[in-house]
Length: 133
Length: 164
Image (cartoon, rainbow over all chains, first blue to last red; front, side, top):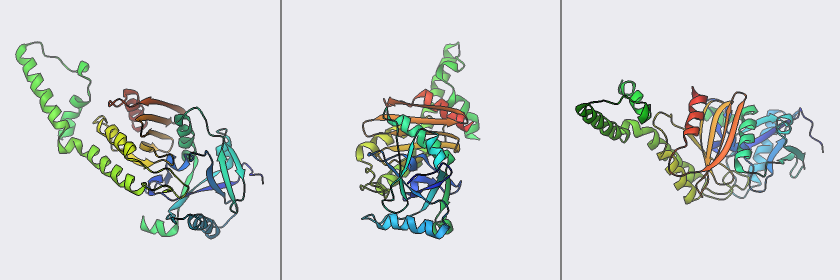
């Protein structure tokens, strides 16, 4: 399924070290891809808040160690494509997409793109986390 | 007040400082240098490093298992923690405390950010290799270098620029 440029994508955050709650910012490490080069995101465009968090919780419960969900970084697909990255929806699981096409010439080039993606992302904290912060 | 009085001395490169001409003046100068070296190791000026090192310990504990990020991340290993600690200990004293975070590939990043568009992100791997990226408005710069125990003057300059 094609992801349009204006579609909202969400990167769920399971590490406290990936965001600055006081400044409402997502840190670059949230957008560094794993060793296989496929950064997991969810297509959340058009969804109300509750269904979005349900997707996040489903992502967590699908993992063996059930990581704690803290929040998400929202951005539009255009942000990734403008950096020559590919956004591909695979619906494995539902609404899942990957961001691929990361530079192969060094971690520094990947970090640069992650810094730029983070600069364009909006931090949304899970409501209970918001209260805690 | 102490910082106000001593920072210019601490920040200046040795070559920029006033050099006394007389022998007595040089002795006073040497004593001052020894005194400031001691100050660098003191509680006040070592606090940034101490607090950051504590953050690194916490981070390493939180990210010690495979998949700590919910997506199958590589754990932070002892080599990476050790390299990050050495990097922190090499930080120039005028730089403020960085934020530490872990990357999914097992690196540790130290970051200085004024805003998301004014940021320097310096990551170090277990093999001691540094990868950095800096965004300062429209200016972007990235690169890598081996960490030889000395904090890169170029990185320090980038950090001062984004925070300035």
